[in-house]
Image 1 (tube, helix red, strand yellow):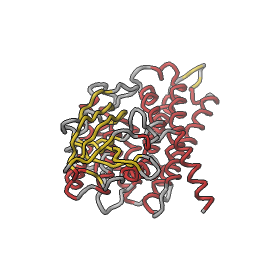
Image 2 (cartoon, helix red, strand yellow; image 1 turned 180 degrees about the horizontal axis):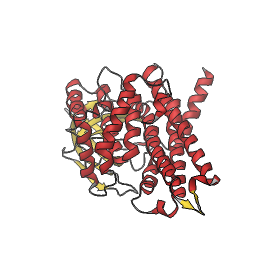
Image 3 (cartoon, one colour; image 1 turned 90 degrees about the horizontal axis):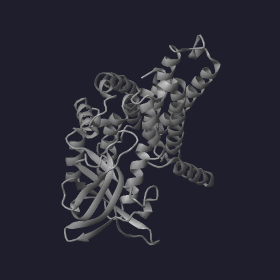
Image 4 (spheres, helix red, strand yellow; image 1 turned 45 degrees about the vertical axis):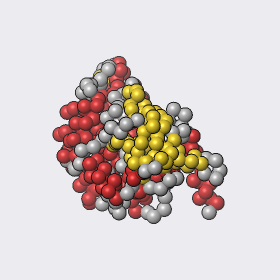
Length: 386
């Protein structure tokens, strides 16, 4: 990492060690492969293996009875995304796909999947979004009905990261309705080889990302693979999002920091009109805006992470502020980086061109920027009324 973590009180000596270790790991294991454009599935599996061998996955997979270290999670995501958003995905999905399991699954189910995920022996996925239910979780139509010693799941999921690569999925389905007629959701662990479960489509995105649609047709899941009790699904999904949301901002900061570094390097070596780009005032203005945006984003991210690690109250507003500002700022920073690079920034496969494609999704997944604003305002009004 740069001097950022040395300047702030958010971090312990252990966090500074984590930051130094992950930076060395990324330089040796991730950066040399970051620009490769080949089989995305195979590359993601390689990243999972490398992360497991370095024992990095243990920072994403929660240990029962121990709070997840969100500051370490954010430091690692920032470092990984600086080099490879795909490596960052390989890391964080092991956590997103297992967090609900760590909170509420039966002990034997929990211990089996957590161990395999932390050791890189099984790849995880988190299956919440549907064709008609993105941010509106209450609109989920996938159903799960009790049938003897199993639940039968029917329905579909869309935009599921690691679809077709994952060995198991934490799936959210409707098991009834609450008193207000809204969906009562429950969570299940579904193995990729279970009868009735299929990956019906792999979705091509603007950047390398293993993602697709799932279909459940009479998929029988043992009742013991329910995560928590019937109706616990919504709370488990929200607790997962609340824990990992700030780390999306950290990933955005990693991409933005790389874009800034590339821009400073290019502006300091490229000449136009007889002068270095860095000597032109309009370029200086861009660099000043970029670094200020980045510093503000990182402060919001690590404030939220610090509060999550050290506080007892929920940090919903702070996490949403971090996610909102950091992802929006990262898009501005990367866009300016392409502008500074000029035609070179449009070359397919160049670092800033890859960042331009990679960063855009961050303003959408795990709650769009618009949803974050609604959450922030709602929390603000609750706080003012209390």
